[in-house]
Amino acid sequence: MTRTLAIGVVAGIVLGAGYAASPATVWFLLVTALLFLWAGHGATPRERQWLWTLLAVAVALRVLTIVVLFATTDHDRNVSFFWDGDGLYMKQRSLWIRNLWLGLPLPPHYFERAFEVYGQTDYLNILAYMQYLLGPAPYGIHLFNVVVFLATCVLLYRLVRPVYGREAAFLGLAILLFLPTPFAWSVSALKESVFVFGLAIAVACVVALLRGPSLIARAAALAVLFVVLTTIEGLRIGGRQISTAGLAVGLLGSFAVRRLWIVLAIVCMVPLGVRILASNATVQKRLSTQLMLFAERHMGNVRSEGNGYRLLDEELYSDPHSMDSLRQMTTAQQARFVVRALGTFFVVPLPSQARSRAELVFLPQQAVWYTLVVLAVVGLVEGLRRDPLVTCGLLGMALVGGAIVALNSGNIGTMVRHRDTIVPFVVWLSALGAVASVTHAMSTRRLSHEETACH
Image 1 (tube, rainbow, N blue to C red):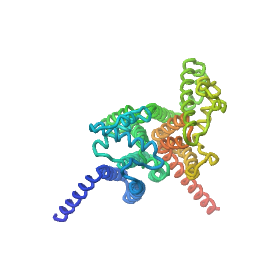
Image 2: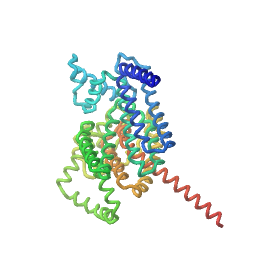
Image 3: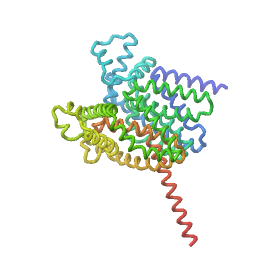
Image 4: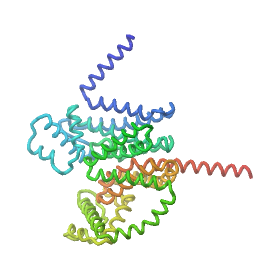
């Protein structure tokens, strides 16, 4: 009893001292521990040991990265990682907003920058509110994004494990935790982690809504889904359309693949539907206007700082009045733009496009990306056989999100960063494809040995 009391007193003192020094760190450790427990719930002791080891290494590496930033920077200045330019601006603006909420004086120039239209997002309010409650947290913001990314990984792991099996779920988790660029975004101050978390919650809510064990569970899933779809637009423009369209594609796909006649009917009706839509003037006008907006954003990205790539016809870039020319693009030019954008999304950056040392270092991960895409096709076939709802949910979010990124991009660095927002939905299909391929190869080899032994 005395020993227990002593341990409790010491733990309380340590916790209090830690909270006084860094409230964000204490909350990070608490939420991380809860995520560990959730991830291991229902697992065998051996599986739980492997899972917690994997998560512990992933978290430790991220914390170490943040500690290095803390140890090597001037604490009198608001700093961040070299790949986190927009994130640094987010940290600055959120702190200015927090100071305004507390009634602290703020120079007019900072007030204007805090609320300027460029980069305005509800993510700023999230960071400001966190610092309003916990105090200024220039490094706590990085810990916040780490725990949000970890929550996304655990949520999707829990979603796919019952249907894809523990091997595929574990492999997908390992890939997602240690891919270099998702690793970089997870320790940054950028909004990608929170946005992807919202998309993951939406997919999980739809599955829970259709398969919840009780009416209360389904009602809760519906309520959470409503909140996500209502608020995600504030994180990124078009977020509601991406999430809604992704869920719709997933639901329609899961319904169609269960019925062969629907699949055949869709395949047969696609040419007719395209022809009808193409002959409708209103649809043509709306589609043309939307593609023009995509082309304008692409042109802006090409002309921005960094390594750009081109998707439009070459004469549109050489025209000094190119923005006016985009408004007069022909149907053929728009079609070529769409085809190039969708194809480029999967292959950029090519080795020939690397201009800097950082881009050369990135090329090995690009080879991993190619492998993931190929394996995802295999995993899709296997996933549709095992669980069409979960598989189509992941696929729908990846397809819609990928298409939007492809059509709006024109800068390699920005495109890779945005493409990584769909990677969490791809890796589970890739992991299932890898496991299915290995299982099939081992089964074929075993049958071959058995046939040889019989002869």
